[in-house]
Length: 68
Image (cartoon, rainbow, N blue to C red; front, side):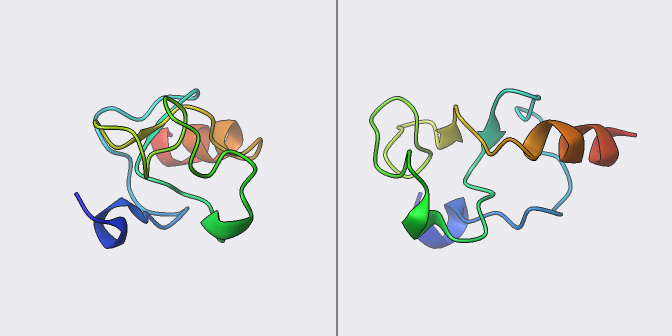
């Protein structure tokens, strides 16, 4: 997986592994200023599975909206 594949728009349809607590890829508008960018086991860009385990606070609400 490359960075382009892991940059997922915030409004993109849900991926099968997305939950309120994690997202496939990074859904940050600007990943460069994310406090978790590059953290092993947290950031999608450095995780082998491409999953962000600490999405933004706004993600829970967005997840419900996209799921709805």
